[in-house]
Image 1 (tube, rainbow, N blue to C red):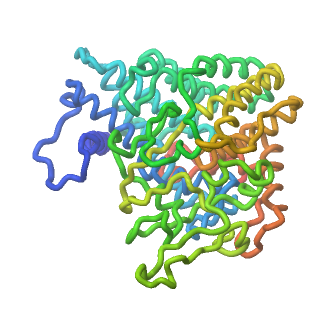
Image 2 (cartoon, rainbow, N blue to C red):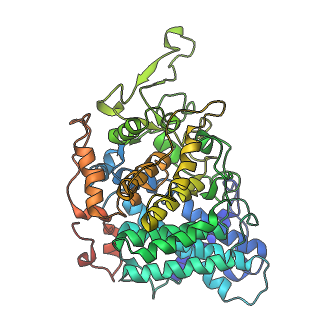
Image 3 (cartoon, rainbow, N blue to C red):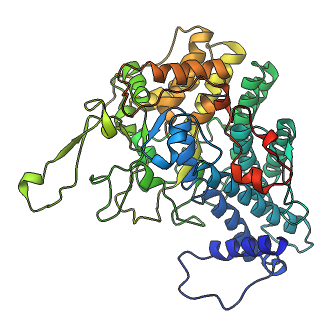
Length: 520
C-alpha cells in the first residue's frame, strides 16, 4: 500500500508539471528524493496538491453535485443523486462516495509534501512557501471535512500500511490541527501582493481563520471571545482588496484573479489542472449559453424559493439578472438557416413554474467556449465581498448594527452599480435591531454568494432551529411548490451533517457502522 500511494503521489506530480495530456509515455520517472531536491520539483509537488484539491472528485464536480442540492437552496435533475436532492442523503450517494476519498487524497498529497520538505537539509529558495501552501491546503480540506461530517479520521502523515486504517478523531482535535496548520501557513506564505498569481497570501489565512472562528462561535451559542477572534482575523483584510465596479464583472469571462479575489482555484493558464465539470453541471442544454456540439447537463438549479426570496426582497437588484436565468432564454435553433427557428425561447421559472423547467439557471459558470472537459473558468473560494459580509455579521454580534452597516453597505453600493447608471435597489441598510440585522445578513450572503459554495455552511452554522426555519419550512411551504418535481424536505437533525460514506466504513477497519453519524 505504501508503494501504491507513493506511485500515485509521483503520478500527480508528473501530471501537474504538464500543461496538456501526454502524447507519449514518459521515458524517465523520478524518485521522491529527486523531486524534492530542486525548486522545479518542489513546485511540481505543490501543483500536485492543487490538482487534487481542484480535481473533479472534489471541487471540479462532486462538491457541486452533492453540496449544492444538500444545502437546501438548489434542485438537481440527476436521478442517481435524488436522495441528496430530497435531503435524505444515502451513505452510498454517488457524489458522496467520490468526494470523501478525493478529499483524503488531497490531504495525503499534502502530507507527502510536508514530510519530504520538513525532512530535507537541501537549501531551496521556495521550500518555505511550498510548505506554507501544503499546510494551507491541508487545513482548508480538513475545515471542509469537519463542517460536513463532524468527527473524521485525522491523518497527518502519508498513508501506508500503518496509517491506512484510522479511527475518527474528535472535532476538537480536528480544529486544533486546522488552527495549527493555518498558523504555520501564515508564517510561511508571502505578504499580499508578493505571492505567485493564483496562490494564497498571508491574508488568505486571515480570511479562512475568520470563517473558522465564526463557525465555532455559531456552534458555541455565540461565544463572544470567538466572535472577537473572528474580527481580529478579518479586519486586517480591509482595504487590501477591492470590489470590482459591478457585480456582473465578478463572473465575466477573463476576469480571473481580480482585485476582489482572495483565493480561487486555477483551472485556466495558471492552473495545475483544467479538468472540471462545473460548467456542464450548470449550463442549460441547447442554449446560446452553451457551446455548440458539446453536451451539457444543466442539472443543478436554484430552488424556487431561492429565487423568490431575492426577487421579493430586492425586485430591482441587478444581481438577480447576473445570478439567474429566469422567465425565458433563447434556445439554439436546430437549423440555424431556418428563419422560423431563429428566435425560439424556452420558458423557465417563474414564467414556467412546473416540470423540469420550473427552476431558474445559475448564470455564474457559463462558458460558451467550453470543450466538454477542460475550462478556463476558475472557482472562487473566498472573495472580498464575502469578507465584508463576514465583518458585518461579526460586528453586529459584538456591538450591534451601528458600526456593522459600513461593511454591508459597501457590498450593496457595488450591487446597485450598473456601470453607466445606478439601480434603486438594494438600498443601504439602517435602522435595524441586532436580531433583524442577524437575520438579514445571512440572507444577504445568499443573494451575493449564491452558488459559490457557502450555502451549505451558512444554513447550518447558526444551529438546527435556524436550518429548520430557513431551509426546511421555507421550502416546504413555498406557494409554487411542485408536487411532481419538488421534494418535501424532512424534519431531521441528521441533515446538520453528511453521512460517512459506506465505502469508508467498509474499507477502514478502524471505523465501524456504530461510528456512522446520527440518523443514517
